[in-house]
Length: 163
Figure (cartoon, rainbow, N blue to C red):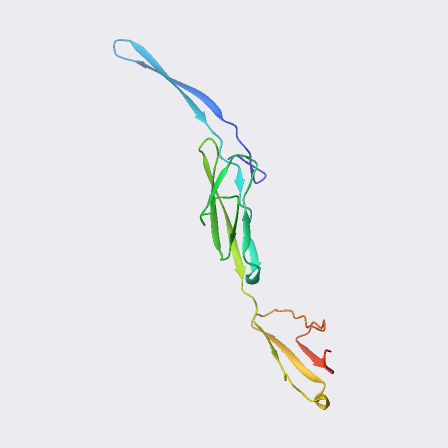
């Protein structure tokens, strides 16, 4: 299957000569030969799935290859080893080598939605109303918080401006 430890190896061209002899009912014979060259496929990889947050787009997709003279065509239309995408999905690239052999590789891009975070609390208070309680609420369970004053709880007490 041409795979060792999960990595395709580069095959070299293989040449085999096939000969056939035909003998008719008069015991006359003739032969023909055909040289068959089996060329290697391009050695390419598009990597494993890429999972990013929605604010980290565009995502750079990169094809790697040990073959120097390969041409590439992505299903996005790009014809380079690298392309950028901004939507989730499976992206396919077809690599062609100098023998005219092609091999496909694909990579999945997964975009994770950003949590919606809201602060609950008064935006204006008098100094005698301190301490003020501010609460963070997120639409995604398990969200961790980091406030501008470096606190990490969902609720903080503000006792003066900037604290």
